[in-house]
Amino acid sequence: MLIIGIAGGTGCGKTTVVNQILDQLPEGEVGVISQDSYYKDTSHLSFDERVKINFDHPRSIDFVLLESHLKELRKGNDIHQPVYSFIKHNRTGDTILTHPRKVMIVEGILILTNPELREMFDIKIFVHADSDERLIRRLKRDITERGRDIEEVLSRYQNTLKPMHQQFIEPMKEYADIIIPNNKYNTVAVDIVKTIINQRLA
Ligand SMILES: Nc1ncnc2c1ncn2[C@@H]1O[C@H](COP(=O)(O)OP(=O)(O)O)[C@@H](O)[C@H]1O
Ligand SMILES: Nc1ccn([C@@H]2O[C@H](COP(=O)(O)O)[C@@H](O)[C@H]2O)c(=O)n1
Image (cartoon, helix red, strand yellow):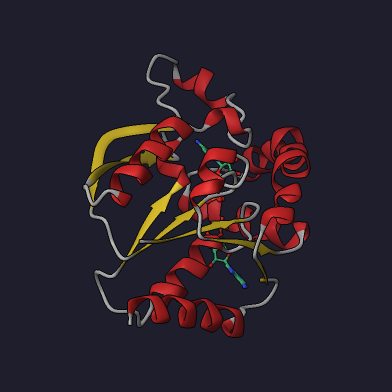
């Protein structure tokens, strides 16, 4: 199994790059795990308490579960990936049955901050987009898709997201094998990653 980690700040285009990679690759050969599925279970908290969580700090992620799921997949076993709701700020209780594939992609803002998980990646990719570009994308996406308003996005950005990005995410570029500039759609870089994957699948 080839395990590819794709990191980068919110709105840099990780999900978009993953979808571009999957596009035209043989179905069923490449699997995806999203770090978002591994936000810690916060069912013991009220909604008002959950809203206040710093979701950009590594401690918000259940890395133990994420790592153990990746190890199970590597052993050839299925896993039940939790489903996360950005509206409820919590796991929904549902899971997605995820099968091991020849190539597994793990994507998320904080996946390179955990040394044990980092060790498991054969290829580490960091997607870069400028912070103003990421904020604009995040505003549009969170308002249309994640049930947020402009006040919520901007206050989260100023209070937690920006400082956490500077402290935890940006320094992870140091560990990247490949940095994809993604202020504009970068088909050349995506094609290079696809070529690497196709070589592994051949
Ligand atoms: N290169 C790009 N140029 C313009 N918009 C983009 C680009 N990449 C992604 N987007 C858009 O930005 C938003 C956030 O992208 P997404 O892939 O969800 O980012 P991430 O997963 O890193 O948070 C989406 O609406 C997506 O369509
Ligand atoms: N309940 C939550 C959980 C996370 N976030 C934000 O999601 C961002 C990470 O996801 P991307 O798809 O943008 O990479 C992260 O910056 C968290 O602030 C949230 O808003 N609510």
